[in-house]
Structure formats: structure tokens, C-alpha cells
Length: 458
Image (cartoon, rainbow, N blue to C red; front, side, top):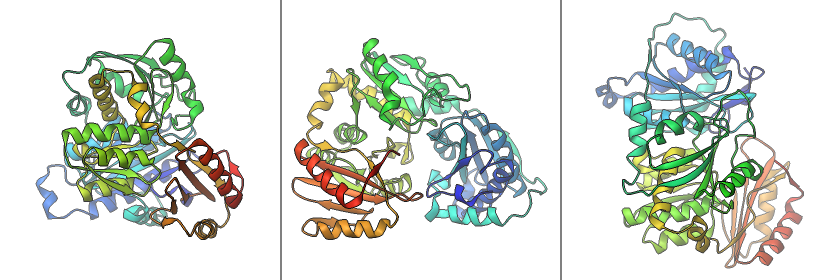
């Protein structure tokens, strides 16, 4: 088992070169040991408090990895509730709905088909990352010399589709008007889950790439603009109200308007801020620090409290819980909800967008137009050997600015700002720049590139 598969937020690698059945068994054993070690007295009121939920995505090797994972969990003495082929947000629902001590989803999210991996969650679906237990799991798994053991745990198969559908649709406004929406499932889990949830909802779905063939027509990453091309064409051709593209495990999405124009996820956060604050006055809303100025402005304008947070679902979820925030949005397409156990959900995001568009009664492009008041670069990658030294240089060159180090370095001026943060796993710096004018954006981006170096296509 390659130790490089243990990332900051999950476990991920190429099958079978980096992740295989032996590795899955060891990870199952280690994850079960860790998750059950967190149990304390107050959980014992739950019938399934010692059990672990397990789900998988549609990848061709997910089924065999699940079996090995469960065998490892059983060998550690843990009981397993196998909830089958699901979208990742359903594992968060299952943990809370069934009252288990945690859960594992077998998925490689937006990675190409040759990848697979494991997303691990603890009690109440709190994320298990490098700083919250994943290093402990890695230590246990890497120390195992064999995959032998007496199976002391039981396995129960459980179909959650009905309860999950009810949970998602409780957020749908009963007054929602019929809408036509193009959906690109990216040959991922949205292809199975979305029809189950929306089959009798007042929405006409124009389906793209709903099939599970073991291959992806395009990379299941909606953040890459090229992957939205088919969706954009379809929205315009079919005269849809808007379009949505999900990633592989359907926990993230991107949206395009009725003209086929991409809507940045920070603009979606800004739009949803007003919607949630009208329902929950004076609430806190969390957003990641790469987001446009427009997000904090919309939160304040609607009487809410903005909370700026570092990038990553572990940090976002903790911030939401700590501040009792009603909603949170991340530039990556993750959207988080207090009433969804402070977890992210692509399906619930789609429900809320149906509500918003229905209530507005105007085209989505007009709804978003007032929010397009700044000019942003989008995230740009630079290959840098000494990342910290380069960030120190950026801070020194802009010492007259307001500077913070919440995540990388953020340089804030009156008319423009940028954030430069390091990749957790690669020799890359990731840059986001925003300015009040296009001319200023181009000028500042050129200046920063002269300091950092040549951008890379990544």
C-alpha cells in the first residue's frame, strides 16, 4: 500500500497500483478501530452506535474494494451497515439517520476512472482528515503485516433511498413552479440518485451522461470549463431555465444560466445568502477566502454575519458548527447546510436553486447580473519549489496592504486583492485575484506572475 494515498482530507490513488483489496482491508480495519475509539457514554443510547455505514460509487472497482473494506472492519470487531451504491452526501445522512459512529464512502470523486479512494466521516458525519484522525488511521493501516483475522462483526444491508428522498425533498418549496433543467451527471452518482429524488417533483430534467459504463465521457470535474461544453449547448438548444453539472460522487455541482454562461460558485453563495437570510434573519453564513467581495457584501446587506474561512471541507464544516451558521459556500462547488447536519449536498443545493429561480420569476442571467460587479481571475496554478519563500516574497512586495495568513497569504487593497495558497500534495501555489475593473485585474495579475513565475495547466 502506497503511503502517498493518504491525502489531507481523504484517501485516494490509482487502482490497483496504489490502492487494492489488501490496502482496502487494512484501511477498513484501521478506520473501524479509530472510529470506535471515539465512542463515549452518550452515544450508547443509539441502537447502531457501534456500527459503521459503508457506501460506494459507480466505479468498476468500487464493489470489490467495498467487500475488502467491510471484511477489514468486521475483523476489527465492528458491525457494518452496507447502504450500497450511493452519492457521497447520502453517507452523511445515513450516519445521522441511523445513529452510527461513522461511515466510509468508497469513491475517488472527480478523479479519472482509474482512481479510487475512501472518504471517512466520524460521529454526526464530522470529517476525518489529516488533522482529525486520518494520520492515526494511516499509522494503524501501514503497521498491519497481514490481512488475516476472525470476523467478529456483522453486516447488514440497508436501502435508504426512500428516507433519503424524503430528507432532500423536505427543502423543496411546495409552491415551486415547473422548471426545465438540463443536468449533466458526468457518468457519476447523480445518474442514479437524481431520478430517484426528482421523479415526481415539478421539474423536467434533460438528462446528459446518466449512464454508468465504467468510463467518463468527460472528466467528472465540473470546475473545468471544458467539461461544461455539452451542458451549455443543451441548455440553449432545449431552452432550459438553467443547467447543472455534478461531479463524480455528486457532492459538488456547477451551474450555468439559460444562456449557457457559467455561474461562479461564489456568485451562487452570494445569491443563496439573501435567500437563507430572509428565512433565517441575522444568521451567520460561512464562505471560503477565495470568494468574491460580493459574498460578504450580500451577507451584510441582508443583515447576516459573514464568516470567512480557509479552504477545505473539514475547515468549512467546523466553522459552520462553531458559529451555528445556517449555510456555507465554497468556490469548489461544495455547499453546506445547517439543516443537513452541517454537511454538503449536491442534491439539496439543486433543490434550493429550484426554489430561488421559481420565486424570482425572472431569467437566471438577470438574477445573477447584479452580482457580477467585480472581475476575477479564477484559480491559477504555479509550479513552485519553495512555496513558503515565494509567499513571503509576495507579502514583502505588498507590505503596504492589509495582509493575513489564514490560508496561504491574502493581500487586500481598496480596489483589488489576491490570495495565494499552497497545494497540500503538490509543488504548486494556487492564485486567485479580484479587482474592481478588468484593466486592473490584468495589470495586477501580470505583476504577480512576474513574482511567482510561469502558470501551469493543472
